[in-house]
Image 1 (tube, rainbow, N blue to C red):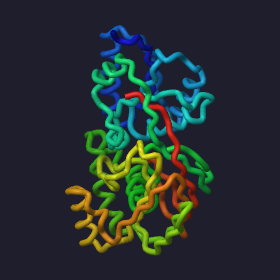
Image 2 (cartoon, helix red, strand yellow):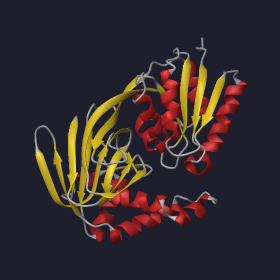
Image 3 (cartoon, rainbow, N blue to C red):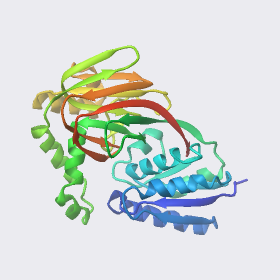
Image 4 (cartoon, rainbow, N blue to C red):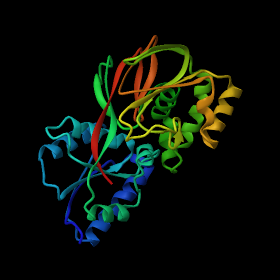
Length: 315
């Protein structure tokens, strides 16, 4: 016997170069077909989903009410932050991935099929408690917050920043080719991204790397739309992992990238390091770009404390 549910949709139509609009329409059609009552709200500007999710959680509705996020990882990040800063931070979240990268969905094993998602929910699954990251920082505009994928400094953040501010991306999006800009900016990052010193501290050790190129604190294996930067990372591990890659030569970079795609053996390279802990301090010595679940942060020196946290996921 199927459970009766009432659905609240939180939608970011901008996500996925049109993917979110298509997924949203398909999901609404299925809900109508199955006579499942639903309400829908969409975001009109960055950050609005935080407020919409917070307002929803504060209603403290019964378990028959289900919150579904339709969008990309940035959309899911906003909803997570809204739920976690509400009066009821254990409110469960459901996610229909419709973004460009969908790394969290990949790490959590979520379906992108709207019909399968609804059928799963009708079977009355128990919410799963999964890991997320929480940070406190010296960033004025975002002194603290939550993330589901990763908080990166250096190479990946350079690519995200250049891509998010590239006028060419807007033109390519009209042809569903916005991802091309990421490839172009990876090449640009290989040429322009400099090295920096990073200090990483845990309860048991302090490590310092003077030639860092890529530093990311991650909640699961994936970044950049499916690249498994740390295959062993897991949203059920109850710790975070900080990955540091020291700058290789161009030839070595291409070799490492090939290993990353082929079998994950890039983790054995001498330029690759990682630290796992429940709490990690990351501090850089000079201004670099950062990204949090794909949203870029302007150049500055960083001092960030990461802690593992959790939220409730329906899937």
